[in-house]
Image 1 (tube, rainbow, N blue to C red):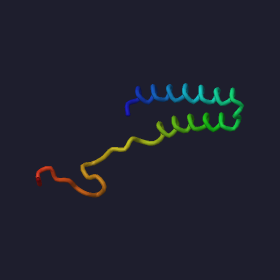
Image 2 (tube, rainbow, N blue to C red):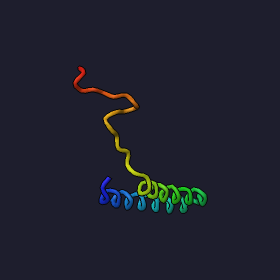
Image 3 (cartoon, helix red, strand yellow):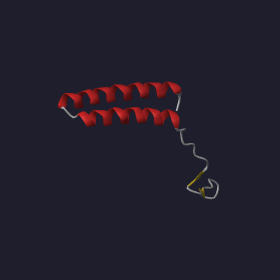
Length: 69
């Protein structure tokens, strides 16, 4: 995934997580607000840490020949 898209998606996740944590705080759910904040942070961390899956021509160990039809 391109860096520009990762940055934009990270910004959206930060904003949504911050709004959700603040809303949970307003409702009086103290533990849940920390869970929401942690999940937002973890989603961003995982997106930047783990590489994107790149598939080869074989999927699931089975090779598909396009000329064998």
